[in-house]
Image (cartoon, rainbow, N blue to C red; front, side, top):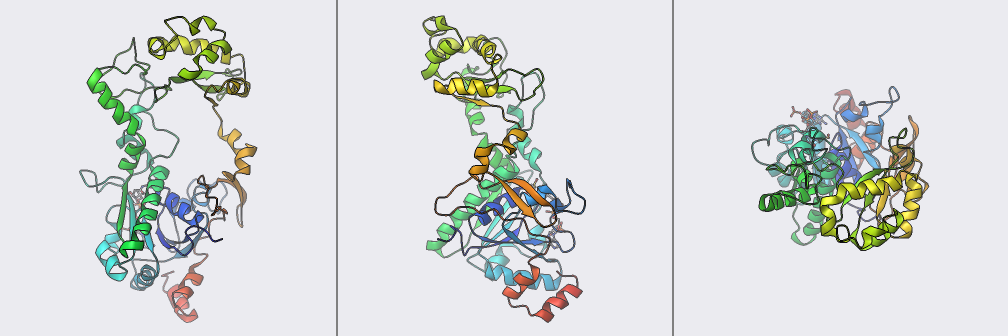
Length: 415
Ligand code: CAO
């Protein structure tokens, strides 16, 4: 059986992280992704954060698996002719240039539509229409403008960005869904359409629960599951909630055995209401099962600090894995704080292909994150990222260029 997106051709004008995340997913599902890169230099991330001199960085290799690379100067006349041919042949053009760059190159939406009315043009920008629409944007700017930073961190500290790349990879995921949806609609409409995702919007979508809380705060003045309750102060905006659980089941990070020396000897512990009795038994607080101050979720809300202090007294005597084993016997929701080192060596993640070892001709073996989306009829084989321009001649031949045409493009530095 073929792959889910076999036969779909993607003209990939993406660079850095947000766009490449999207096209990598499409490539994993079987699309033919042709990455167009500037002749000579290519995607800037090839040389950023290099750990081996002269070798494509992990930043690049981990975001560009299963793609083909063509180098092309799309600002030269001959380059534009090549690009026109590629536009006519492909189904989707994906780009995350700074605002206006594609138009300046001479390939506006109207022009692309005229060349290929079936083409879907998918773009990531930092902001949608509005005061910041012309701004260049990187990950952390999106986290700040999308509501994540102001709601992350501790009450007495500054706003905090998160390690999860919700602005870049998060928006890439959103865009991939938009592209697949547009491809589906094209089956009946016969037409391409524009798919646009702003990073600010993508981050805000992932912070949806915080806009929920803003409205709860405006109505009631307090939110009882937040650490500011009952003794702290609430202002006009949703405050930073530290490690408090965002949902209706209070949770927190508690210390485990070894926390004094191991920065990751911690556990996330959720005091889920249906297993309150079991929690009390495990941590040795049986009296809390019937004590009216602790017996109901509502009664516990003003006492969460005390509850988690008691939980921590117990978890501090166990390693995070011992605590996990015990708590899971009683279906008490919890999770160890896993370091990247632990994740890299976790056998179950290797087995499912979520962490994969990939071989690369100049780098050798390296670890990557495989496809987190598993399709039973379209399993993912992770193939190494292409070298710069590795497929230029192959792709030009596919669109009708002869050997001597290719030599002429080379000598004019178009490819
Ligand atoms: N041949 C010739 N020129 C090319 C080319 C090619 N194959 N590919 C790109 N270029 C040109 C572009 O046309 C553009 O030229 P002009 O500025 O003259 O129009 C130029 O290269 C630079 O493109 P850029 O402005 O997109 O790149 P930058 O490094 O200055 O900015 C970034 C990078 C990410 C800030 C910007 O692209 C952006 O804001 N993108 C949208 C938001 C986004 O995706 N951000 C996340 C990035 S991941 O953290």
